[in-house]
Picture 1 (cartoon, rainbow, N blue to C red):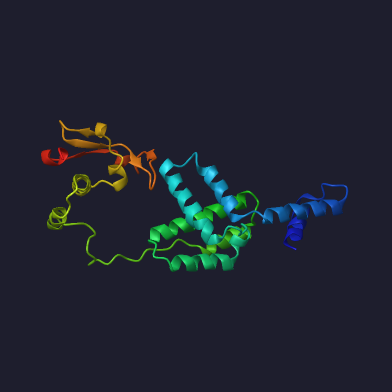
Picture 2: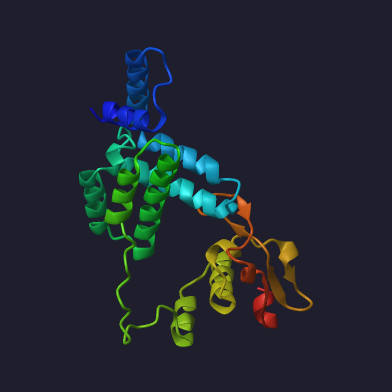
Length: 239
């Protein structure tokens, strides 16, 4: 019924393009039925391919991991893109997120990706404007709760750091945590450091690359401001 309705809608705008109206109508119905068989996961993979060239390598890698490892499994391997636009599927998706102990930022990443995938489907004519609008309406960005003003800051004091280092015996671990504490490195920046990045004479470490999550792929640092030189005292730089 939906396919016939969509075919009639197009006929109102364009008129018949075939000498035999019945044949034309049947061909349009089959065309829309085929579109309705398109899977959510297929559109998701198309979106990844379409955005690969204009995304930073690390951003694309993270989006790929979120989509392939989690989002497709949540929505369902056999769920069509049209089914993914239905209220019951969207609500089930929201309920799933609300029951997970993800950070608000992580939940919003899944919402963003869901909406972007449906947006691509809309531009490709796979879903209607009403379906696209339904997804945007039912999947607003989640607002983070106001951080309590008396909440303890999530970092070690100097005394806490000194106590921690007393139980660290492995040389590699001592270097790792010393650089993290005194240098303020992101862990992915620290793991990407090579001997050529360390200047022993001027006592600094140059941050110019990052290693992608759970991989050995090198990428540029997170932002332009992440390129920097971090200076250390003599004892730390010679560890």
